[in-house]
Image (cartoon, rainbow, N blue to C red; front, side, top):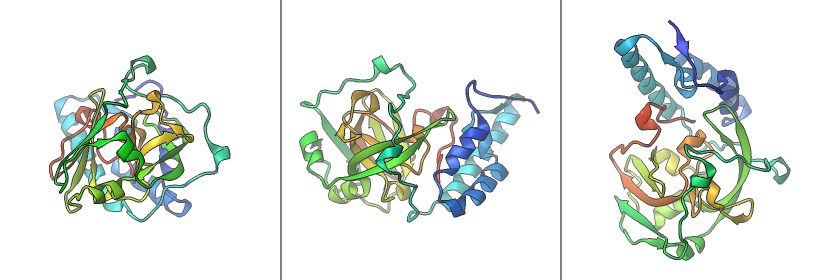
Length: 256
């Protein structure tokens, strides 16, 4: 079979960087599982040029990959954290649009919409969000394009926010809507992971527009495209509402 690759994607580099999500003792089994389940095909954007039947095979393989990654996910295992000296400066901008097209959100008018399977559907102002208990993490962002960078993020644990709105954590998913129209769905286990964070600050400053003001959901256990920026709504649901890239065939789980 012939395969075509997305320009600029180095499969070996991508898998090496993705392995950094896992601690040293788990990397070998992670890499072995990635190769054996064909995840490399999807995470590097490869496609089999063989008609409709090949596409069906690849879609089924992607579903298998997602199931395996979800099964391997350890909600208690932390992604590596780093010292201030390791921070990548300048931290790269990345999005499906140019930096100058990043949405401008008015902080004075902003209210975070909360919906779905929660006790309280009241919207949250930025001041209310900033008053929540916050933590700082210095973690690696790994892009599906094959590069990685280390950044400093400060915000509230998503699990704490979900607790405060009375979310039903027996639900399967959390869905995010973003100011520019981007959307993303994550599994509840990832939402409750201690490093999954609603981030309000980058490198000790209010989150810049280019990195996702007023907030992004930072998940160091996921590839970069699973980390939504410019978040304006959070819904708890039992329905997989998809996402911008997932709807175009990207691997749904995309992390460990």
